[in-house]
Length: 171
Image (cartoon, rainbow, N blue to C red; front, side, top):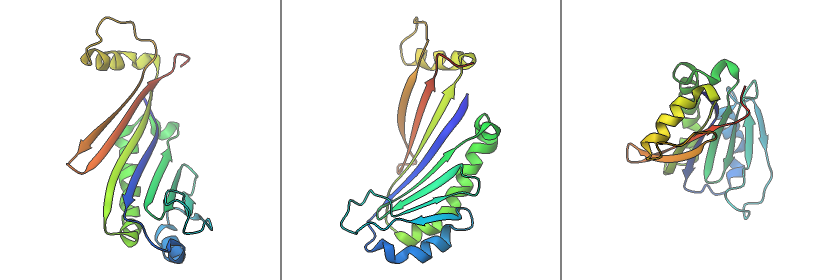
C-alpha cells in the first residue's frame, strides 16, 4: 500500500482582520514553508477562502490559512509513500507540531481537528482489502475495485478520516 496524501485540518473561531496578521504568520511558518503568499481578499468574503498559502521547500507540502481554518496537506513521493510508520507519520507529526504556534497565535479556541489520509493499494495488496471487506460482512465476492472512506473519533475530540482505494490498472 502507498500513502498518497494527508490533510490535517484545524478549524477555529474566526480571526477578525486576519490580513493584519500577515507578517507574524509569515514569521511563524517561514522556516518550513518559505514560499509564502498573501491573497488580498476582502474580510466580507466567506471565511473558508484562504488568505495565505505557503509551500514547503521541496513543494510536497502546503498550508492554506483562512480566518477560521489552517489546512496542512502533503503529497508523498515514492521515498515516503510505502513507509507509514517510519516516514509518513513522523513527517505529519513533526510538521503539525511546527504549525501549532501559528494555530495558537490565530486562536486559542480550536473547534475541530481532523486528519484525512488517502491510501492506494495495488492488486498485490488486495488480500488486505479483502480481509477488511470480509469483516464488513461481504464475504464471498471477488474484489476488483475498492473505494472506502471511514471517519473515527479519536480521544473524544479529534477526527481521523481514512480512505482506502485501489485501481484496477495498477502495475
